Length: 315
Image 1: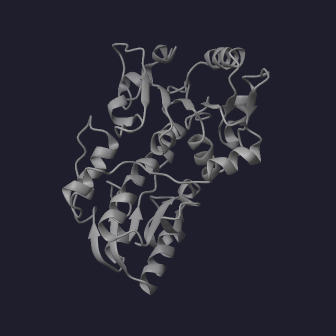
Image 2 (image 1 turned 135 degrees about the horizontal axis):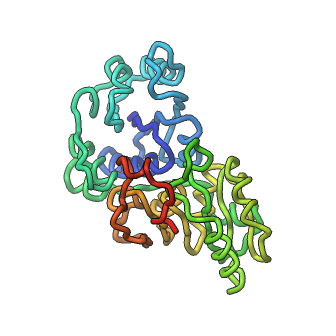
């Protein structure tokens, strides 16, 4: 099988909801390959359920000039797929899908799936799954990620068994805009860090290499706080979150990882629509959404966001 979804961490976590349905329908030994965004697809680097990872730097570059797409095509010419599922709703992989040797192809360009605007992204993906999987299997679809075992991560990083993970940064950090609209104010993060330390909690600050400067600016940190920004790749981050007692984050990738591995997560949401973009609730995980509930939110993808100068919904 080939799955195509080349989005950011949250998008890829949502799309991981296809893995267990494929295994339930075709058997646990089904070979699943994944075409994803360079770096992001490494979420599956230690997932035994995913066989080959193909990386694409630019989704929009046409097939003839796109090394990532050409590598998938070359592989499929040698070993044709039984099933190729395109989870991208746009046309950026249409050329690859048309030429790809596969017994069956699902998704664009063969069928367009219109997203209900306020349905959760995972429920929208289920519309695609329903095109080739039985309803009773589609109903069970939920994000599912596997990474480095939690005990291995804990031992290597010198963490106690009981710790909380805080994710102060998000994927919009450093973008060229006046405000990071999804961000919680730095002063609030500092207050939370010190309150947790004062209560005897072990707080782990997680983030990527590009987040290190911002997270360091929240210091100096009190005893019991571990700044691990830039020290965990995606498989280790999955293990770190899986072993935590709980996670606190804004609407960003690690929050969706927490939902996918079943770690209780508190998500601070302002401009985005929680019914659509919050970690997916499965009935067995615990997702707590904190919102100010201002009349102007959610405002994502509207003119109101561009006009916002205060970001009051995240204060």
